[in-house]
Length: 489
Image (cartoon, rainbow, N blue to C red; front, side, top):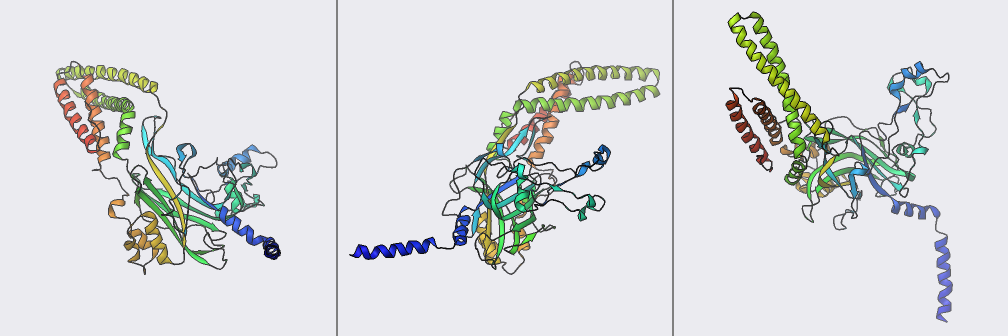
């Protein structure tokens, strides 16, 4: 009897659930499907979208050539967090204990921070061409996805061709953020919840960087469905050493504070120098040793090539000077100068032949790019209810001392964040005393001395050149030891 009584209640409850508003269910599903993905390339996807020039109706080639600089090139697929072939996805996400409820994290990735290319000579740089980071919060199409064919270009209207660039207009029908993302093969389902872009800026010597706001488009907040709500929003980029320990060592953290935003907020970016400079993580001792070991032969050969080129340049200057002196000198002095000129000519020929041999040797060496120093990359977007909570969240996410942020709650966010970087982290100009610069300087001196000693076969100054070689080798080895490298013999 009791079962019979319960059955109608279950049926009634089921009918109520079936009648639940479809929009509510859809919002929950969409909310659960939202992901945050980060993409980096040499240009911004949204802020730097190029104009396309319409094809001339009369096919006038000269008319098209006039507007050729305006032509945009469709970018290939941008990889999540730097470049696709340079990254291996890490299976784990943020540990549950470290994840914040007010923060959305991109999947953690591992990449090698440094890369060496061998064309035309060994060139060690930060891996990938970093220009702009685009963070997209949306539901994404399942991989593999390709939506570039659906991209509608930003075609320039003919009326805009004769006016300044800031007055240009497009004639396309679909000017949505979703369409602009397709240019980079970022394929979303429905509306993108939010898109944030920031530019990478590097110091002249490449030792410091910072992120600057390049604009944002917020369709709806990530932490609430309330259309009238507002949140203080920051996003962060964290680079960590995955090999350090379970508590990964943070090598560098960058951030952008876009202030208080709400659903429907848009911005074209903020210009200024409020964002702090941060030191680019230098190569670890282990990575530098690995680099030195794998490129040892390349460095030796290219070092000799560079030294031979410098020697040939000096020889030409010496010969030109001797010719002037011979023309002005008396017969006795002129004869001695001619003998010196002959010695320099013979040395020049020997060094030119050696240069040809070394160039051929370098061409025969393997020159496939190599990568060094694995790091973990992490991107996060945080929305908080107040500026104070935003600062504390930033301290928590990037691992800084929270007291640094909490102690100046009344100050402007930009000035507070600028103070969070210590003086050692800020380096915008070259430092002549830097160990890496010492290595380059002493290396050049060593190879100059080596080439000079090798090409002075019968010169009376051969003994002096051998002494200079010993001194230069000692200085070069001292610079190598300061960086944890093995000395050369």
